[in-house]
Length: 256
Image (cartoon, rainbow, N blue to C red; front, side, top):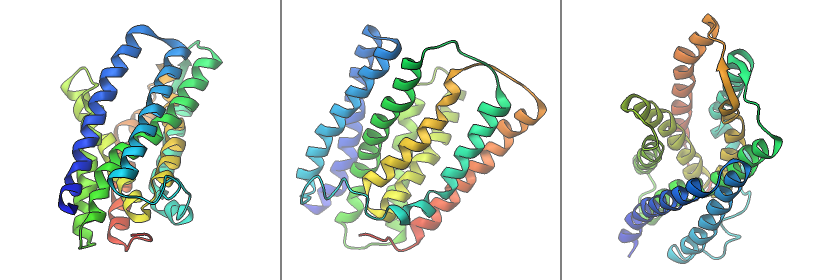
């Protein structure tokens, strides 16, 4: 039974992803603006609640409270240090140096996009791509670095592909696969280090707020400094995220 639970979470993760994509198309075809963002937020929360109930039953957790708590939050901060540093880099690069003209939008659109939708997305993505994918690690008898690395790698692949399929060109898809894959690997590292999905979701929500500000930029200031930061330094920052993630995968988890 434990052997099947190591795999079934990964299968369910991909199934939930397909269901979300199907319902997302229905929302996109019928709603836009602030209402569209709100509907997507409700969609992700409903998926989150349904999946959470399945997760509790499948892995025989004591209760939802045993999953949704802030245990090991302080221990998770060092594991997220490179991601938090990247957020600072992103804000400086894209909203301070790179932004030339901002979209003429409304506060309800900004609020629903950056607050409600990112909160719902952080909760749903961490449960789907980290908890379901990586919980199989805890079903095995050997708590080793290699096994943690394997599950983090699987999370990276699925998370990267989930974002790459949205792209309109191969070049865009490869870029999205690599960048989002690195973040998926890092969040998997946080989950495997703390065994706490809410902690990973809170940090995911916080980073998503700032990383998505740039969608409201309509024109870019293509200065030499911006081009260097965007084309080269960005990859250095992503490499730092990857390195820190590997370090905390290697460290003994604070919660098994």
